[in-house]
Amino acid sequence: MVVVSKPAIEQFSHIRNNKPTSALFTQIPIVDLSKPDSKHQIIKACEEFGFFKVINHGVPMESISLLESEATKFFSLPLCEKQKTGQPKPYGYGNKRIGTHGDVGWVEFLLLTTNQDPNLHRFQTFRLALSDYMKSVKKMACEILETMADGLKIQPRNALSKLLMDEESDSVFRVNHYPPCPNVQPLNPNGSNGDVIGFGEHTDPQIISVLRSNNTSGLQISLKDGSWISVPPDQYSFFINVGDSLQVMTNGRFKSVKHRVLTNSVKPRLSMIYFGGPPLSEKIAPLPSLMKGDQQSLYKEFTWFEYKISAYNSRLADNRLIHFEKI
Ligand code: GA4
Image 1 (spheres, rainbow, N blue to C red):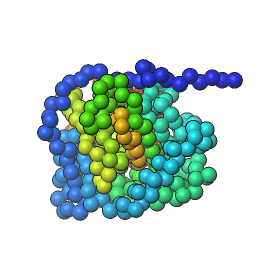
Image 2 (image 1 turned 120 degrees about the vertical axis):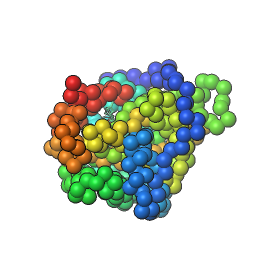
Image 3 (image 1 turned 120 degrees about the horizontal axis):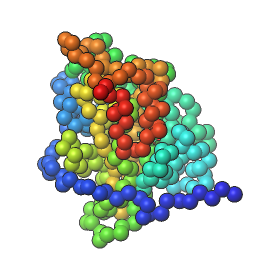
Image 4 (image 1 turned 45 degrees about the vertical axis):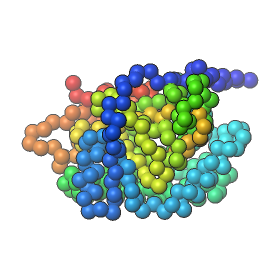
């Protein structure tokens, strides 16, 4: 019999640094997708933070609520039932172990591909809710990428969105459940659990990530000066991350945002994230129309397949792009 030891709570990372939050009053940029000037707001937010919040996004609230309730039902099943969806290698149910190189977090999750039938044949309602939600979220992600292309004066307008629309697009969907984490320190009035990490700091390797969470705090983003700011939860909105691939496609003009999730001792947090990625064979390189004069690419040439292999061999907090930078 193979005995797999579970990580004990002492093994979970606690936040170490910490550079005090520099900008107490830093506002997370909010982009209203229904406004004609949203393209300028998107560009500014991607340059400054690699992160923004989207309102008037067009994803029906019923679709969001249905998926949330189905996911909550799934996570409340006995462990052995959840494990029947397979191990996250790379797709399936995972508990505390993130990736395959020793990272742990106070989180359980489901990782799915977006273009194959996920291991959810025993969960028909969940499966349908997922496919319905994914359709709207992908549409919104493409609208954002097209608005972004407009703002960057990239031709054609679908130069970025077509990568997500491609039948071969290597996109991923993730549902994270952060159960309340027992508090080892005196309780904070807002239930925020001092310092236990739910999901350690990292950047997303893909082009764009679209996150929606319930009304529980925990998400933090890192600013350029290395300080961390907490993102107030908003269950009616979506949060957008610039991924490593978009950083490369803009030749570093947009930065992929480092982010993490801290646990809460009182409330569970549930987040659902769509990671929009290109086909495996796609060359990831600066878009020619963004290169001015004799500007050179900051990166070596590589395909998404090569980047993905390298990313999946890394630790969560590693700087994955460093291996692809020109010296
Ligand atoms: C981060 C973004 C996505 O959640 C993910 C993660 C993936 C995993 O959980 O299997 C990785 C992580 C993510 C980057 C480095 C590697 C791979 C865990 C890990 C340690 C699904 C993805 O595509 O990359």
